[in-house]
Length: 214
Image (tube, rainbow, N blue to C red; front, side, top):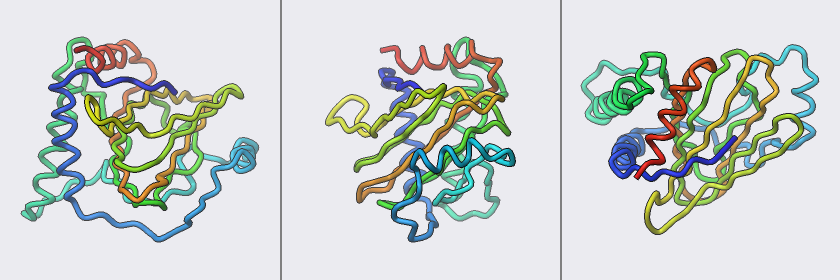
């Protein structure tokens, strides 16, 4: 897991526009647990579980990645449009990254304080993850690979990329990469996770170059 700086201002504007549509959309979640088990003990339990499939066994949010509404509710219609528009950036708008293989792995807004994703390794669906996180409060992402632990707090800036944090993580079929994240503060935490297959590293590299270019 590596942090990617956003330096491309037109791309940042597009990301902000999608985030605004997502924040306006109604969201559902449960009120707990306030302290989910993201400990190393829980991680070792999953690592030693031969039946662990790959996706998170525990999380507290509604994932909108696979949803598309056909009703004429203005909030939902705008969200549908913005969702397609932003993904099109990766599928056709970045030189060297163009591919219909780009897809959304996760789109969600985590509730203040209680939102989280439990430990998982995505071995059921290996992919490159470009995870865009917007949080005006506090939160963090953690990753363990080959016994190396990485923790990246959600970023807060008064200018530039503002409240955005971007992470690149490669989840491979061997399941050696484990990830979890948590919202800690009093603000909602928005997540847009755009993914592509492991073999298309060149397309992911092109997307990262585009995002980090002034």
